[in-house]
Picture 1 (cartoon, rainbow, N blue to C red):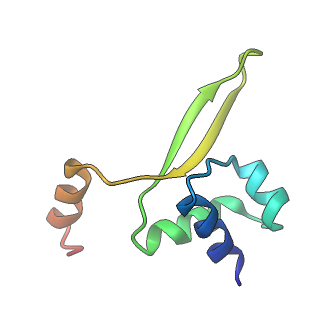
Picture 2: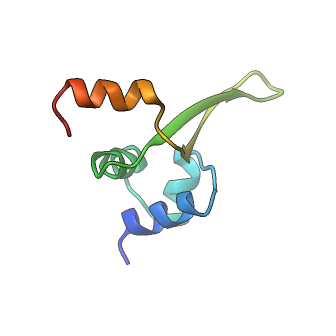
Picture 3: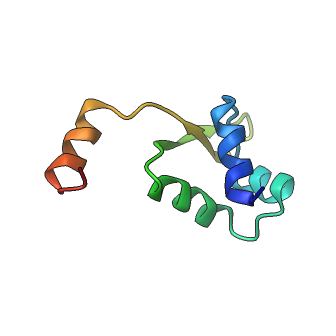
Length: 80
């Protein structure tokens, strides 16, 4: 199973992961490229920023359902 498939399976299971977690858990040299390639296959991967108690911003990736606005924008671009 490829790195992309493993990351996608984890996201489908409802997990939220940072780029650092993807890199460590799946040995991905470029976790952002893995997420980009999953998005390119049509999956709605959201990047949500959170601020921890130390004031540091962390970006968590999660799989979600695209909004009507996103679907309309893709349709307008001729993706469908």
